[in-house]
Amino acid sequence: MKSNQKRKLTALMAGVMAFAAVSTLQAQTQPSKAEVRSVRGQATYTVAGGPAQQLKVGTILASGSTIKTGPASMVDLFLGNSAGVVRVTENTTLGLDKLTLTDTGADTVVEVQLNVPEGTILGNVNKLSAASKYEVKVPNGVAGIRGTRFRISSTGYIVLLDGTLVFVYVPPPNGAPTPYTLVGPPAVYFSPVDGVKPAPEDLVREVNSQFRGGGDHGPPFEPPGPPPAVPFKDPFVSPGVGKKPDRPSGS
Image 1 (cartoon, rainbow, N blue to C red):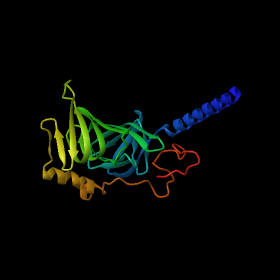
Image 2 (cartoon, one colour):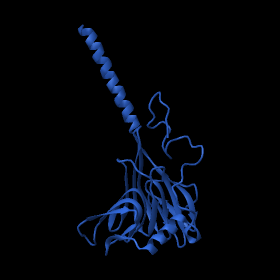
Image 3 (cartoon, one colour):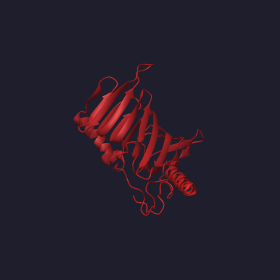
Image 4 (cartoon, rainbow, N blue to C red):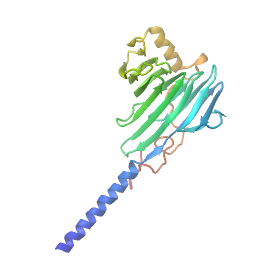
């Protein structure tokens, strides 16, 4: 009897260890990347302080890359199905500080950390999982973003068309951090002088025009999906990551 119990206990422990190994694989964090989907005018990028290179459609950028745009220039970056797209407007510096993906098997957890020391970016972010983190750092604060269309400038001026954004404002030179919550619709804006206010109609039209594209605003700015016939759940994730044994993977 004792021998039979010992065999059962050994089998149970082996099963627990196998399950733990599969769970670890499913929750494995992978580096993510950004794909350049559109370039207008002059734009360059550097990697880890290396020499500047011309930015082209199709360029793949990893964490540690920095983009710079010139006058009358813009760049659209695809960060994946969940993180959506970022538009880098003219005379802007954008640092891709951190881009990761963790496929838990149930959903995809993304971590995006962007840095805008100068200039302005727009973002169109799809609904993120509860465990995901999307942050944009500017010289006077950090914005935490959830499924949102937004415009953020390095001066700390923010326009939110819809979704939710929490901006922790740090007054210079070393003021106390103060959180502000922006929720839309209706559209709202934040400024270091006024705090959170309803966005005036002319400001809403201006930002909407940047999303719609046309004229000097480039192509329409909507989150594109992955290229046709790409056989994986989210761009830049290995097909095997998060795949449960003996079960077909699904989008």
